[in-house]
Length: 314
Image (cartoon, helix red, strand yellow):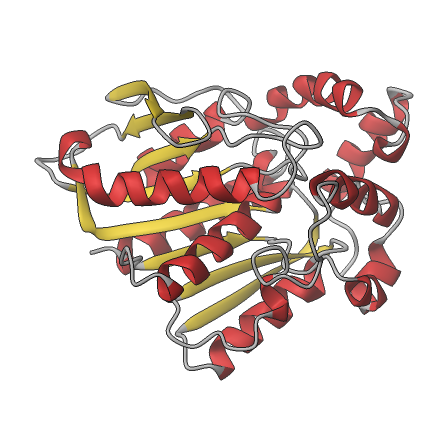
């Protein structure tokens, strides 16, 4: 279908700001430029409780922000460990605060938002290790935050979706913890050169918020420690076996370079016997989910994923 007029208006507004392309920015410039995007996320909703904690790890503490939803009944509550978008280069728990508050309230889950380390200062496997530290900590310490370790989900958007998939692979291969559900919003699932030959990269690699050049730069930062792009913990789509993973909801956007790799990952999960639903949001661009203040379909998507989480974690 045609590009959503609200997405078109957003792209036009960003273009009118005269910002350089992300591919022409340093990481510091990118981090500064995206700060203004918080206005697209809407007003932060009230929740019952917000707590910042530091999770110990061999590489130093991993900061997390824990949200207890409004209207929460007596616990323990289901819990979602959430990884924000940002190409492994930018973003923070504070940056997506409005989104994670909404996720908590709409889903009825405690949301643990993870401030994983960013590249190029901290290349792979830093973000992966921080994500895994958070998931294992939540599974072990669930009672002290009012959560039910038997109703543990992981989720994220874009790079965060990558980290969610990787944590599921690690849990399977390391004998736990048990993850009940994975919520993958336009996930980045493949950084090998072949991914850039997919139709969605060719069709949407220019002109729709993020470009193939941006993606190559950000992957380059994350891989700068010399990692192999075909490592399944970098490119989950390259995993030989996806069986035994948690049930999944995969959200994709029609005008997104990452569309096909997300949908292919969903197809592979289903073929491997994993209960999986792939929902494409036609007319939408990458990162539409974090722009509910200006994109109506983003608000619909929030309700969509929250309802799915409620049903999956009942």
